[in-house]
Image 1: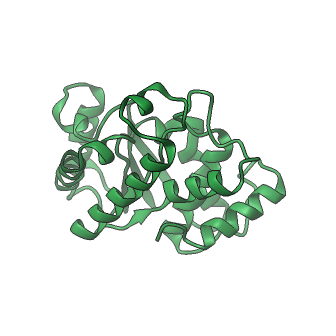
Image 2 (image 1 turned 60 degrees about the vertical axis):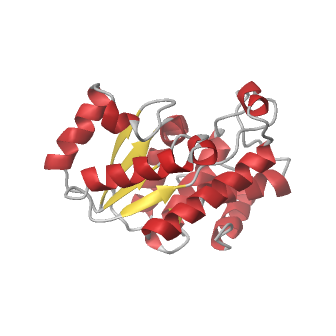
Image 3 (image 1 turned 135 degrees about the horizontal axis):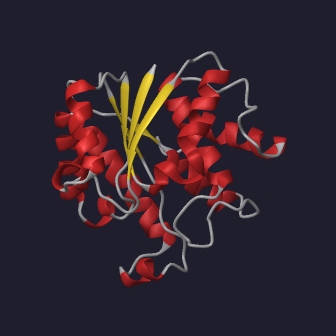
Length: 221
């Protein structure tokens, strides 16, 4: 199975796509992953800005052959500009329609309280988190593309297990622990099962089992 991830730092931090592919390969799902990412970018940038990432999208649109394309929007954009979010997703889907057989939306999570840009927007972690889930839900319904509820699961853990360190000190990005939960969520969404072999996750066994229980509930669906 060939999977293309298009997004930004929430896709490449902690080598999340490698965690995902290691999980898949360890559980009998041979996966080859490719990525197109740049920190801070919205999806529009892969269509409207001329640089190596946009050039790669152009090349893949003509030469690529993927079973699935996972689209991850910049984390604030769905909250403050839903139409831009929708337009970026639909334009990329159209661009890659001959290169990818199916698409999946990767839901992100709210920034942690303490980040100055969050307060400047009049938001809290909780209000941004809930608005993000609502935006991905609305878009999924409008364009009939499923969502990987990584953000909802992330926020559920933050609310219910404050002992687990989910955010890096920048208040924006996931720790390795958080990225493992995101990779688990993608695995469950793509393959419709929980992994039996979790050796790819370098976490305490109790944390792994808790994450499996959260992902298995399909929080946010």
